[in-house]
Image 1 (cartoon, rainbow, N blue to C red):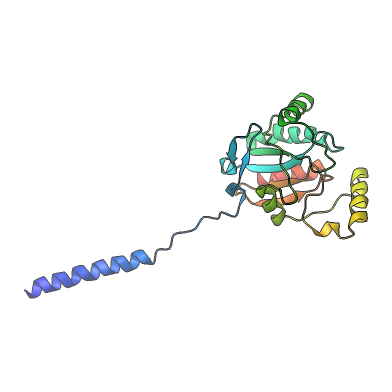
Image 2 (cartoon, rainbow, N blue to C red; image 1 turned 120 degrees about the horizontal axis):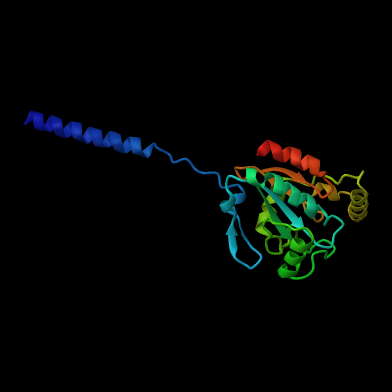
Length: 213
């Protein structure tokens, strides 16, 4: 009888120890504050989860087809040709908020970009990047990287800086997207590494890109 009681006592103790041990095991939470939390639409309206791009380096760009910076499509395609095999993806988001320089439908824009600049990287549906209608992705991007300033040694950069400063002397202190071809560089873990304004030199972007690939 004593042996039976002893056996029961040991069994209960082991069960309680196991239960206590199980309760102290706290699951490790995955970081969800990254670009993979967002879903965007492709050109024909299909939802695309950005988690599909996990493990890749991303360059997210708001674009326009009738802008002084539109020839940057050539530089973007060159980067994609050179580094796409190493894990670079460029995500193109046409936006008509800056001087209405991205008019027309997605089909019009895509035909122009593929026909004129031979782009092969993903081009998404048109979106807004500022204001109440701003896409959630861009609200997040702006919260992670503020405006970096125009290169005023660049002719267009100097013009844009003067234009914005006349409207608001403190314009450079808010994180809004200022113009077409602002770029966000995202590392392989989905974090914003750097924001490049439209006047940033392609070589500077490439140098930072190389560090992530």
